[in-house]
Amino acid sequence: MTSRVWDKVESNLLESAKINKLRKLPGGDACVIIFMKMLLHARTDGFVCDGANYRCFVDEIGEEYEIFIMAVAILRELCLISLNENEDVYISNTVIHAEDAQALFK
Image 1 (cartoon, rainbow, N blue to C red):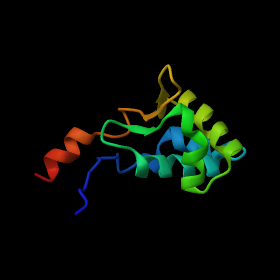
Image 2 (image 1 turned 135 degrees about the vertical axis):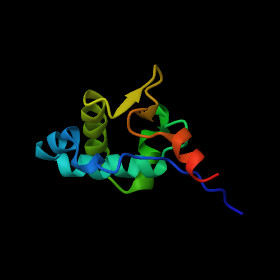
Image 3 (image 1 turned 30 degrees about the horizontal axis):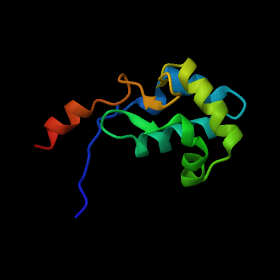
């Protein structure tokens, strides 16, 4: 049996100023799609993928590596994701609120 994990994401996230700014950039729509895929793959602690396995994650989500690297740089600059010292990707705490979501479904 699979377990379900719930993350609470702001309902207006796609209309936010950061996402609108991202969409206006060249390749921005692809970055938004990558960000949405990151949200779907994120664990409750926000972890998306480790820095040593970007290529595996990119293959898993069906995107191009160069676009993914560009998206990581832009999403980091917009504080939608963060990277640790190992270049592991995490969704920003301002985007997902796992504790709030868990309380809704108890």
